[in-house]
Image 1 (cartoon, rainbow, N blue to C red):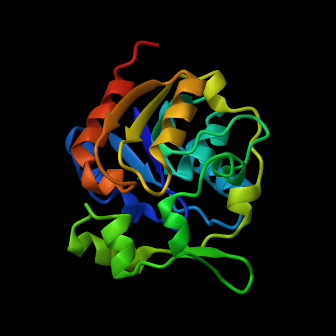
Image 2: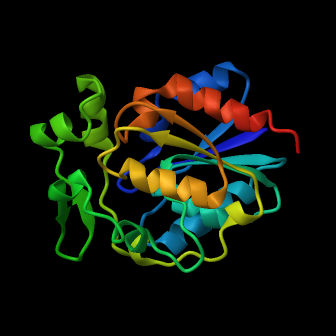
Length: 226
């Protein structure tokens, strides 16, 4: 089985730095995409291109906004399932913004900044790390700061087509103390999609903070009898 890992907004494959070696040590073929973040549709197209380049079955894994990408890219015939790690799972016609606007603002909102062209980034101050990513080790915070990129507003406003989770098996790993994508939203989305659900403690930085649990959850999806 081939595993394709999709990062979230502002992210890069560095999101999966702690996860990839564990998966590879277990003999899995792993590809971590770098999406352009120019729009959700562009990111979907790029991820689809990666999936189509792989011979054989693919398990798609998305973190945060990456969940919206795999929700759409998951229709590719060789995709066998979808794994969401503290991730968005929009329904047809929904955008990321449309989901979060139905709930009270997340704590992370006070650290979000817009550039001159409307692009989004988060201000990684000491206060940000203490409140939003308190469980991320200091040496990992530096990596995240160096790797972070701006995100075009269209990744949050583009609308989803028919979600792949309606036709493909799905798994959802909830971050139980998430202040970026609030846990209540994660629980609501995972229940709506009928996913197989597990929870881990901690912040939104689940792939960095709980890589072992993420790998175990991915392997649970890999063992699913199709």
